[in-house]
Length: 541
Image (cartoon, rainbow, N blue to C red):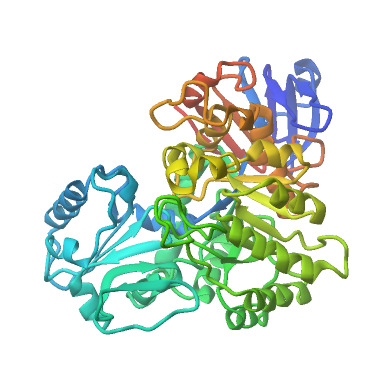
């Protein structure tokens, strides 16, 4: 026997909610669950024994939606999260340039700004960044990853100081003469990021491993990551090669399911033509769904709404595809027996995706390839019923509640706000829900997401009773989204998501019993150990 856990509370999270004192692991899988004495009877001279001393064990967290490569890359750039003003943003960038001794012509990148946190809630433009430098090219991504701003030097180097014309997916904001103002949304951001020098395979590998170190420290044993979107890194083929090499070298400390961001049918045909489809790979690294965005973000007023924004009657947001183009992509995935996932935040975007899914799946009367929609923020009862009726998976980024609840009513009005971030309604309707973080857009700690879902408070702890408290999840419901729900989303419900005999020994030890403590104690719970395939990949000292 390789590993024994004893003297704890093993929450299996199985259908019958069984709880045990200990478990045994062999060949990376759970082979026994039971009382401490029974588990100890299985030890050999080579067995490692962990005395839990009353601590609890739950299945390892499985983040169903994140950007591992973007997170890793963001750690080497300017962190703009929490900037309270344009003045503070400028100060952070200037400090970075000075500290790193950046010279003229060297690119400066940052990410995380949110104009909704500024004292003057306006999106910066190139002229604002020109006040930082006219000689150093600067590009700064918004927290949502759906928008960036660049200074004049950056635009000049990339030959973007002339009218760019309309785009199918995203937009380039321009002045009255058609000259870009430095604000790019949607796929248009890759007019900049897609043309910067690429990292290359070796640097991609290092960036992945750097991110994994942080993720396992928060109890993440599996994740579903959208990495092709980081055009700065390299081509999809280079990113795939980096992962395949890490897998062959045995260096991945957790299980990775790669969501393939492919924004056009031509992109899909190229990658699927190489034989990469859902399920291809190994237990540690495998190909997941094809994926695309259909709209932007609520904070940037680019989420596609049926009715105009309450605080800007000139826009209903941006929809990146028309019905026919999206249908072509979804049908292509279907014909290749490949899963498909769309990001959709606004109700107009979700309705369009559901229309397409229903049309493609009508001959089946079911959803055999587990098509899904991620985010699902601005919904309504009809949309949720369509999810349930068609068996569509809902990917819910739980932490967004904390960040967005202060702006929701301003953006969509009080009536529509009642149908936003309705996680409990999805659960009660019987929709299969998988929880994610969307890191680095939001903090990647699953415990943070769980707290957000069960408290529904903002970062300052308001409102005291929680926002739309009828939509609060229980701790158990939130944990299931981060375990069983995410496992189902990758067709791995027989392999992970619960602690049962025969399943992978992917589990975490927590410092407190999250099912028994007060909700307000959740942010103080620590991950003591993270175990993948029976091997300890993180230990809290």
